[in-house]
Length: 112
Length: 112
Image (cartoon, rainbow over all chains, first blue to last red; front, side, top):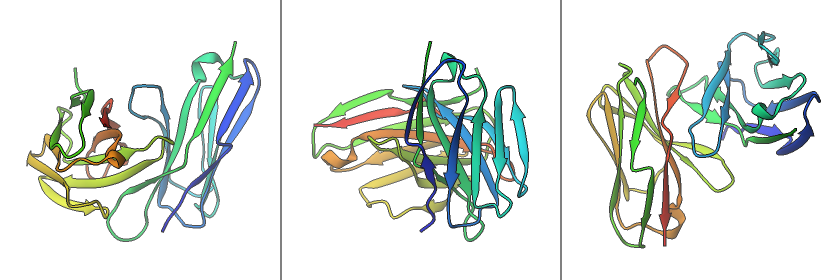
């Protein structure tokens, strides 16, 4: 069974601090996505990474796909209260029917 | 508005009842999904349909029966509801060949 473990599970930081969220697996994924989910809403796609070692930036967010396509990280610079939410990584399987396996989630709270 | 729409948003029902959740997307996508998010925010795929054809069935009890009357709709019927069915159910869609999912805002099902 493919699993994606995220760490930390919970994170509470002050506005202006930097943070990194990790998404790890022993399985290889053909691509990996990061989503942010706010209370009462569905996950919203932030980024898709496809190539091992790929780095993508979205304003203050930097996403990296591991060289072996088994892990990923999300780094937020100078966090703001608007970054508060549940962050989910999701890996696309490389065998069988194409589907996404979601990570265990990281709940981020940024305090003003 | 172009979106994935789910109804109802909230559903409270007694054990043993049968209920349905409806999902519609007007994005022109050809693949639709049902996901279940538990109390720990873990998001797990249940079913996937492509052009009205079932392509993923993730070991879900047969009390759950998805129905796709056309590629814009994917409904979920649940028989003999149990306490453990309480969760938030998300519908999602995408175009085959494109990685991005678009999620609905969820249906919070509470079985009492």
